[in-house]
Length: 105
Image (cartoon, rainbow, N blue to C red):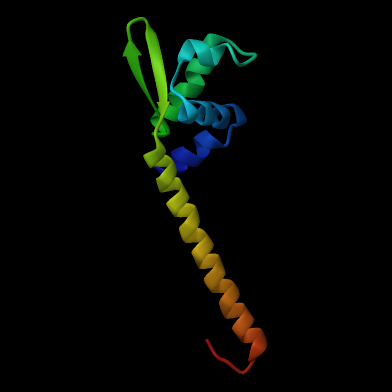
């Protein structure tokens, strides 16, 4: 799932769509009005985000309403936090080795 999330977020337009629908749910039509691309292209971006779990779509009458899924964003953030924690541990270990080069592994 992490691969899909980060692949989806690798595109600037998709990141912008996620930001917009987290702030306020929007129809695909209103999203399409904001970009210099076809309605179909915006639909494809939304589909990528939906497969990654970053947004959810629901039909309301003739409109497809898109809303952000904050839970998926929290999962991605937790993964990045775990990597940051590992990095800090590695830095602390390097600092201790510099302070006392006689330390062993």
